[in-house]
Image (cartoon, rainbow, N blue to C red; front, top):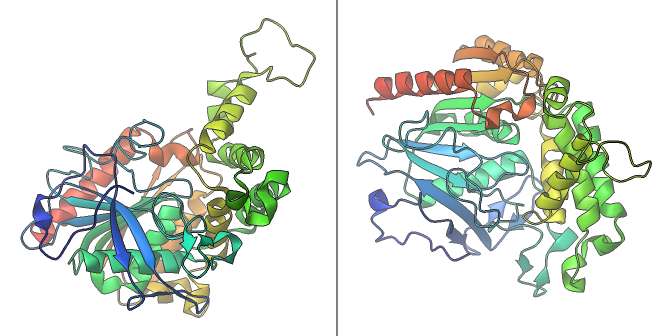
Length: 392
């Protein structure tokens, strides 16, 4: 990465990364290992991150954004690989719900990721070779612990808000459970307190597609100078279907043919939906590491917040002072509204402050990434109210 970490003398309040695609990095040496749920102490550790906006003198306006499975730290700036706008540009920026004129926004690449944070493609200092499958398995809680190390590094005691969707929403829930005193407000969107059997099954199909590619080389493809592009593309294609609803697929593609007047009677991409999925797969392999896909999907599979608190979800939030805004989408069948209701019921049982909105949308799970007016209105209103209460 070409970015540089803040030094102890850095004027933190003057930092703005909106224009630059390069990430800042925070490095932690052997004296600061990340102790994983597996018991392994991971060191050295690098976390790549982006910031937007200005930290106020009280250091009370920091918002942490947690990215989803295939996201990264480039939430609101031009992506350095794809050249496209950040994945949450609809939500982050001046005058937007997560208003960079008001808040100091942080987004980091998760540990186990592949865009600057330590992961399976990083070099194992003991061997001088990529970690590959010798990299330890990580959990959602491990990702959050790494983020907490970054927040400490930036000199921030309490986050005004932690927000994210899908896997990012899992991280938000884990933040609220693990560090309740450090989270003033939380917005878990289109997420769940546990990864379902169906979702684990989808993850496993994607992993098997990658591992079945001859170029995967038992995870050692980087040393061989190759990559399992076909397997990773198929994994992405399968996952992408789960992000959309049947209505969205019908509206976007139906059974329309792709640049032809009649079927070819071959296995070419006759249908627009086939061409679209192939494009999604091909584009994905240019920006994502196959082994990271294995690791991050596995982290989602292991997520069971109630299981970490005696099997009772409400115990995860007992005594929490955090203000919660839970959001789901009516057509999201990957993380259906019933998951969000389970979170709401647990928060109510624990006596926490919670509001809940199910947004009517036919766009499926991906709706949290799109320009949904009700999402914009709900999140903006929640944050403005919380900011007034906190005096920001």
